[in-house]
View 1 (tube, rainbow, N blue to C red):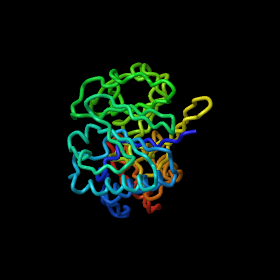
View 2 (view 1 turned 90 degrees about the vertical axis):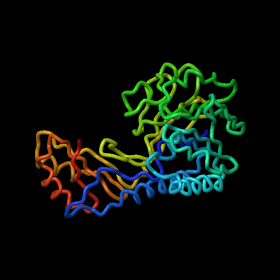
View 3 (view 1 turned 45 degrees about the vertical axis):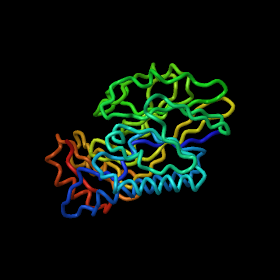
View 4 (view 1 turned 180 degrees about the vertical axis):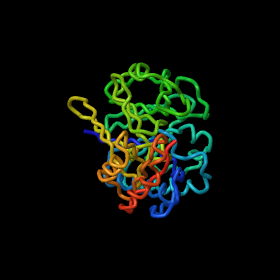
Length: 308
């Protein structure tokens, strides 16, 4: 059995967005909480002691100066290497814009896969081949997956790709491809990045987006963290489990036709969170915003913001 930590879209240093200040709202520092999310994710990965970590792009955020984020990422790689956990990374479209990944000092056991063509990394002791290709330009419009090689004989192969697939799940096109193309090389698993929700891609080969280390805006609902991927030795089965680590999560506060009673029911059954839940009230219920905030004030973790 081999256990892999699949990470992507960490956007280290990027602040939470769309937060509001109003009487009774919890005090949330958007920048500090985003960094805390990364710290908690890293600590959880190290405590889980996987055989390897795969980072499928957008380690950095284009809006955050590399000088501020570089030391954080460098310390994280050093900590993983110091724990004996090997790492393979590819650049995403944000990384292509900042160029910050190439400024890191890569410790022993940490590899950044190139962008000229798909590169294969062999981990003989794990019986694994890792195939990946970094994004070289933010507006990448080629189907990079189409150029990935077939799985090497005798090794289970994991593909790494930062992609918008066919576009329905993302806001920005990047290395578009399809589930059929991902099925062709015969890999055991695809570690994908770019889409900010932990979601499986339909196809024969298990392929997942890791979903990001923290929600960045009101559209990014639900828990965030990383994927624990287990490859079975005997039957080749792949199990994927999402591990939620973000201290803040965005959740929909939609009462439907129930009005205030619906709001109270949703808030009373609010999800567990280590720090706070940012409830997003749909625009069609904007008239209930003040009432929703009054109800939410009963729980010091709850913040209500208007949706778009």
